[in-house]
Length: 342
Ligand code: TXA
Ligand code: MG
Image (cartoon, rainbow, N blue to C red; front, side, top):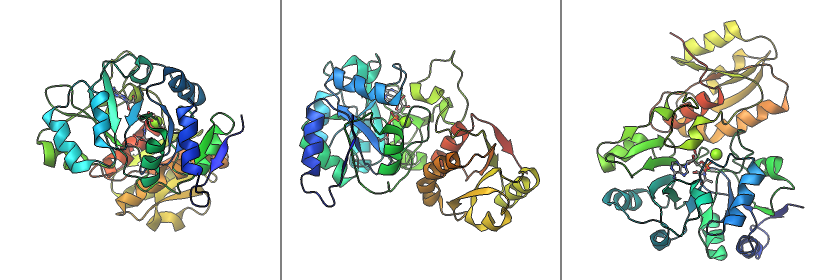
């Protein structure tokens, strides 16, 4: 199939076309404030199966459902605990997904057989316009081939999905750049399953106690039953192996300087860019520009695949605020090959 490139910026009927395709059971790439999503009608199992096929996604990895208005949640979940009301008031629309007990209306293919479902209301005018035009909630994972870095531009989506989906909606570069924070509200204590644009500190300010799932900081083996099934797969990965360097930026830059061969890949803070003229270099942003690191991360990881780098060294920001999300994605891209430099 020819993937239609829809540009609402110049074409007034683009959003309606996307909505029509979605209602007809097709898959459409849509922008959100976090990353691009691969959307289909969440209530149509046949349409949702097409998402799994286009991504090559394992069937045991559930999808999150996107809504444009809070009222849409009532059909999708069987109860809304107090914590969910509080988080919605504080952070929706925004980069936060809540895991809640699912209703019978949500097909098993969406939740991968779990009795819970992830719900998110994106803070993105075009995403919400497409959801409204479709007239149904949209299941949408990140719009990358399974295992590859997530997509933060429509061009990234076309790199992975050309010919595999009906259309992609142009929405420019994603503002946040890493996927939404996922918090599970089905246990006694709220649990952070994936760090993202809403930081752990922000969740704690609203909820008090929040547990952090092991999968956020550690490699989880196949034998372990994980709370967010997606977290057990190698992810976000460029073709070359990645080594993540944790520690003071001057020390990690020095480490790269001694260890990197000519032609290796370097992902570094801007201040150190001049030190690596013999290497293939992509920049994260200034050392303390934490939001920029998130914006540049996936684009940089994808760019390394344009050159045949044998290995990549990456500087890691501190694990606080959005830095926890960037560090998590970097470590997963590296299969948790991490060197602590002192
Ligand atoms: O920002 C985002 O969340 C983006 C945009 C498109 O909204 N979407 C996204 O979806 O990142 P995806 O499928 O790439 O990542 C969703 C993660 C997966 O790791 C999945 O295992 C987990 O959420 N997940 C989904 N439903 C779940 C559930 N019921 N319980 C636990 N984890 C769940
Ligand atoms: Mg993903």
